[in-house]
Length: 407
Image (cartoon, rainbow, N blue to C red; front, side, top):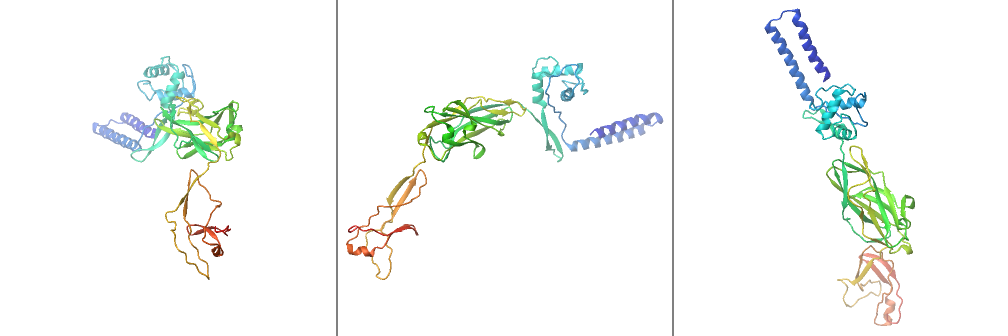
């Protein structure tokens, strides 16, 4: 762009040099002017085809005042000159003089800041909010990339209660459960959460430790696990001995987009072997609103969200859950009938069909005893060689009968 502007300036200068050398007619001068106008039009068309305009960006880290010469003064002048109502002179020298001081006062007046003419914390914050960002490439209508600044902004994070998706108050050994959840909202900027703090409390007395009851704590964004921490004693911060402990889950980069809400769920995994003295022990989980670490796009670090601490219900630890088994006669159980056997071979006769139904958890049938078969006379005992258990067409187990009188 600079080369093209210089070319126009040279052409105009050349015209100024040519004029004294020879008395040109009006027609000749008009022809030269028309040629220059055509060149200008061509250059303008080329610039328009490139698409986009440059936007000044810059970040400020220090106080600036009259008399200083600094790279940030240069940046200050560059961003101020983008607003002709603030800095109509538009000089970029790197020196903070009277013109720059006047421009700063106009900038402060425009944004409701005390008009002191120096760049202090309030003015610096406003400048960073407007201009501190990195340029991203976007496509113009012609397909050429143009620079679009992503302006850094200050934001806040609020938190409120949210129900867990699978609420359970009795926790069995070896399983993972939703403990507590919270809904977070970002306002003013995207928010990047870096750390979450979880408080674990022994509800029914200061006599248990969380690492005795749990193996891990994990953070979930929907079905996506974003972090996991061992519930070990080494990771626990003691607030009250054998009662209240805090766990920090750090190293996160969990983003809540500006103006949107996201839900974070804490899950706890119970140890497989529950000690006898821990059976029926109760714990609660709390997400601490002031135990967060998060940043906005301006790079400011915060350690507390607006809202309050959010706690779970009391959760009871117990040994592995037992299955509930129901035995019932099957609908196709065979009716009373005569049985015709063979004297030369073995015949299988269906004596009874039944169903087994398990509830709460899966169960495995390891043995069955107490099956009684009543026969008419003792002379038939020798005809029964085995009693078999079948699952559909699959033989599960077979046992030789032991007779006691006619049974």
